Structure formats: structure tokens, C-alpha cells
Length: 231
Image 1 (cartoon, helix red, strand yellow):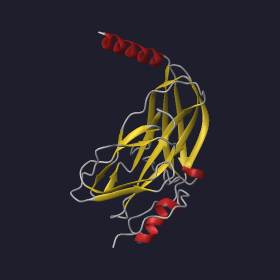
Image 2 (spheres, helix red, strand yellow):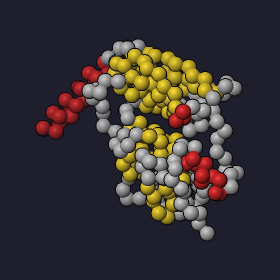
Image 3 (spheres, one colour):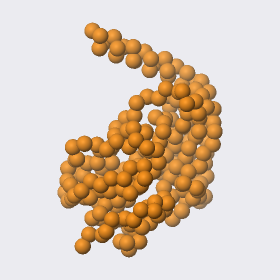
Image 4 (tube, rainbow, N blue to C red):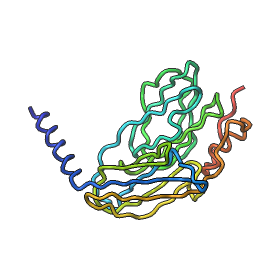
């Protein structure tokens, strides 16, 4: 009975929180007018006392010797699992300062997910297949979304208030691959933004192995050396 009452109270609080909710609608294109996919759009509350919902779990899979999704946004404190859906072994690692780690050669799914408890970009590589490249953008907010193939991104259910609107993409030609502005989200209203961005050339599979590993982390100012290549 007590658990049922707590559940109803939690549901009521959630519904009340959404009564005054706002919506953010963003479109992103490059300088040639082409839609930009996999851009992370987040709203970081400017009020330090604003209550945040708990983080949800994320999944970074491996299909056909590629990280899927290529870009995964997660909230600080969120857990991410790394299943390997290929029929071969992978050795997943990162030297990025928010979360350096290594998952030695494995197939299937590691028993424990990893907790990403610091904000920032975590660049992923594989010790065996050096062309594999993925990104986890750890953001200090539960209000984030990723642009789709048409360059569109929509956030709903955002509490009214003042926020830092942050746009991040791994190839964005800007400091820290980000651009931002301060915005006010108003009750029962939709805020729209259209961005035209300049992108750097993406990293390609055609890189030589040593160059590819250096580029993965060098682009994000990581001064740690990559692991040695397998023989």
C-alpha cells in the first residue's frame, strides 16, 4: 500500500512539473545547406537549485565493427552498457579525461555498465579495429536531444526557466566543438532555433592506423598517448 501511494505521488509530481513545460525546436544545417545529423542539443539550467530528474541508462553497441550509435548523449551520473553484437571480439577503450577506461577483449555484454560521473566528451576506440570511432557526450542536464537525419531536434517537457543552450558535434569547427547561447524557456511556449554551422572534415576509415588513433584523441586536446597497436 505504501509503495502504491508513493508511486501515485511521484506520478502527480511529474504531471504537475509538466503543466508549465516548454518545448525547444532546433534545425541544424552546414554551410552547404545539408542537414547535420548527430548534433547534441542540451539545455543546462542556470538555476543551481533546480531539481533534476535522475539520469537514465544508455547503450553503446557494436555492429559490423562500428560503434552504434556514433554519438551517444548521456546525463552526468548515467550508466552506459557496451554490448558487443558482432561475432568477433572487441577491446573498447578511452583516454578522455572525463572517463578513461578499458574493456578488454570480449564478446556479448559486460556484466556491469560504466558510470559516467563527469561532464565532457568521451572518445571511444577499439584496440583491435582502429577505424572504430564513437563519442559519448556527458552533459550536466537531463534535457538533451540528438539531431536526426533531417537535422531536426526537439525537446519537450522542459520546465520554464533560464538555460544555457549548448550545441555540440564531433566535427563542429568551434572551440571545444561547441557553440552556446543563453535562452529563456517560457510556459506553454515553443522556442525555435535554426543554426548554420561549419564542420571540419570528419575522420575517415582510410587513415593509417597510427594516424587514426592519434587523430581520435588529438582533436579533443587529449594529451595522453593511445595504446600500442596490436601485432
